[in-house]
Length: 381
Image 1 (cartoon, rainbow, N blue to C red):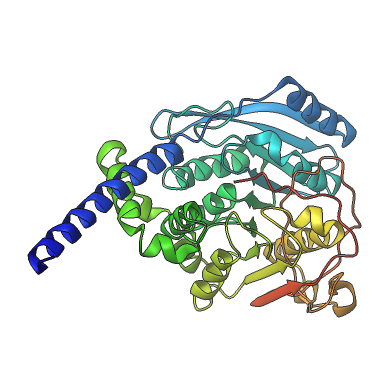
Image 2: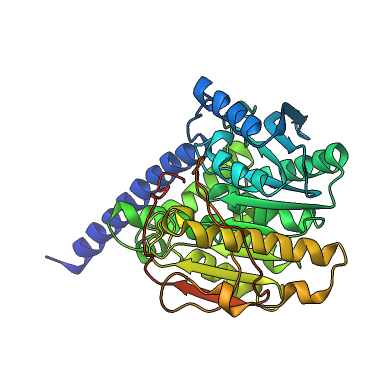
């Protein structure tokens, strides 16, 4: 076989591969932008009312209008015996506000007012496209302003899971008023997540997305910009956190196969210089958004401690409130050091011990195997 013929075959193969990858990229982008809407069910609404009644909280349906005219809807639950602070809870992809009711009850029990919004193109909110923070970060700023006007809290904190965590982190540069946030199972950037997603199709790691399937990623990004004017390069929690000084607690289970813990580690390392109040907890037996299921008591302690310590600092409390208590900060397993971290599972009836103090600053924590499991939420995307 002549060299000229070999070159023609190789060129034809490469061209076919590029066309194939482009088709994959376009299909994957359409799926990402239209993830499917999970509508609120009657039993979810009933559960929300039960949780409000059980925790002596006022329940109300609320809405705001986004800058592009999209109506965004959510629930507001305000305890009659409030601690003066509020938390905005953000759900994952293809979920809705009901997925955060477990976190809502946890926080209500400790006196926090909570807001549970549906992301655009999710639940009862309007919008046809999910943009993974490109537009949602601005939506969150509107919700923040609504809480500030309506509740007049001392502090407003944020807690998000998966896509909700990524949206929360991307909002920090344009919503600098947050006292502290907790983000579980976030992606580092939409590009990095795309490498993982496409690599999964070959039963390989992100290396496949970076190399063999790289044309699919590039085609998908170009297609989103051309057809929908959505620039996925802007969906970058790692850049947003690096540009912010708001205290951030990252949680990422080491058994997460949906978005590997590498994503939160990237955010952590990229943010070390600019943000001196960032911490990462990596529970060994937790999967995607499963820290509360794998380590319920530890999860509650770390989340509440993160909020309360930074909220007290914001309110002018003594700095001693931020000091570490090694005895109370010990993890339920081996290989942990004192620290604080944040929650992320839908366990509506779960109870855990109240929190004590922990340390703030740069911390990378790996929890050992838990002594028990109460189930994990691996369905969150």
